[in-house]
Length: 317
Image (cartoon, rainbow, N blue to C red; front, side):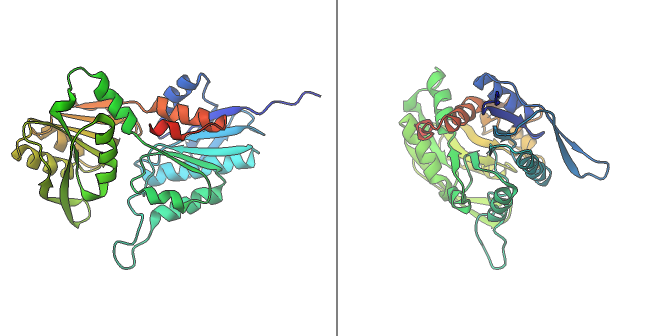
């Protein structure tokens, strides 16, 4: 009797289908056939149009805005594949929503990042592959393997290949104290000095830059962060960096959330010359100031290595 051999199958939710297609192209396989859809009352369902019994399934679905819709869709997909007897189910979440609610900042705050981890685990995933978690300790919220990939090599490769940039003219800037480790990795990768901005948050989504630690005079400042949300912090940082003598300001961010009028705010900021983001979140048409760098190869390589039981840590180098 012939038994169907265990295969790797790649599926995509509706949050970022173009990225899933690029990952599938890198892996040299086709995307699996499934159809997430909504009933008339808004409830989410999914139709899987091929067998997944005994196969290793990878679901690509960032939980980007609308966060609750995309998160619920991912949970429904996981449940459907589990009930269809998939051998393993890995959730590839390029952008992990609710990651900024990782601790109790004040009394009676929820720790929603942990709640989301519980929901995903109970739904039936075997592994998480994600990119630049806002708080690295979120990995400890799971009792399953978590591969938190870094975008540093992707951005570093961009600047190393672009002849318009010379290391002696650049300085890496962390937009706040919390991002120092992230920006430090970026600076080390390119062999750059590091400057740090001291920022205060009087309330949610409002940031005030207090001072800049480090020398940016005469340099091109590369402001390296994980998320651009409202864009206010970035604009304020760029203004202070410019007043300290920087010739140019270029923003590098893994996740372009761009809530509300963030794109317009950043576009109108004369201090910001360019904004580089990855395709972890699907974007509408962006102005010329914005440039998208794909992380499909990075995610595809991680998927392949997980599937073949190879080391993933090599991707951090």
